[in-house]
Amino acid sequence: KKHAEEAGQRIQSLTEKAKLAKKREADETAWQTACQQNTQSGYQAYLNGNTLKKHADEVQQRLKALAQKTFAFEVVTVNAQGEITHREQKQARYETEDLGNGVALDMVSIPGGTFMMGSPDNEKDRYSDEGPQHRVTVEPFWMGKYPVTQAQWQAVMGNNPSYRKGEKRPVERISWQDAVEFCQRLSEKTNREYRLASEAEWEYACRAGTTTPFYFGETITTELANYNMSRGETTDVGSFPPNGFGLYDMHGNVWEWCADIYYENYNGAPNDGGAWLAEKYQKWSLANLFSKKDIKTTRLLRGGSFAHDPSGCRAANRGGGTSDGRGYRRGVRVVAVAWTF
Image (cartoon, rainbow, N blue to C red):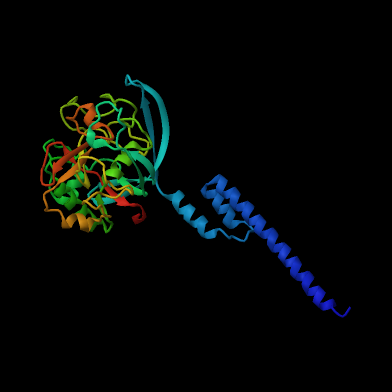
């Protein structure tokens, strides 16, 4: 028994390794169970259980995500005659920015993804500037649940330029330059960077996974959106059904300024979701946009307005306006990058 002591040590080592292997297996099993449940109680059970807690950091991240606010909404789909054929209940994450005096700004989480930007050649009433269709990948970001309201504009800018007054109505009669300045002041007020959406972000968010002319389907009706002078004026934001991301008023009500310069087609357009600001596109920032605020260029307008016909409200439709031009149909919706909340 010359090696008895060494044998004993090796046996003990093997026993400890076997126990550790069992604990690792048990830990992984408990982790998989928690992931399948994907609930606060499930993740807490993992942390409180007799496990190695190898995934403790990830558990904390998931608990934080679950604790974030969500809202429920209904998405409708219509047929070619405008009749509702499908209803679906959905939820989306959101955060609220307090602007003071009871005024808040709701921002909705938009997941990243890839989509075909523009319209196909056979889409009814399409224009040549909507092509060629091209694949674009968009990073996650946050977008205003509604167009900026008059109350929100007043809270940030201290004035209300709108012709058709109403705190819950979208602000209008603003230029692209005004919209950029609003983003700058909002960023200073909240210590969080807000900016205009790129044209690609806007269309991606509007479509919310759909490929039809409207996020409702092949057509829209006056029960689904405010357009074609059916009401003769703007309406309170959120008066019509949202899209699959939980965004309201993406078709009609007010045109929405985007960051990009207007080009007559998509030849040479970026495919990474960035704004097309020059012949050689570039990543952009609020500071970049603000530095160009006083340069007169034609900028993008999206979504149509209460005065546009159905064609002008399609997801792919593109409008343009001089950056200093204030039109009675022009409004804005803000975005923030995903990691700022």
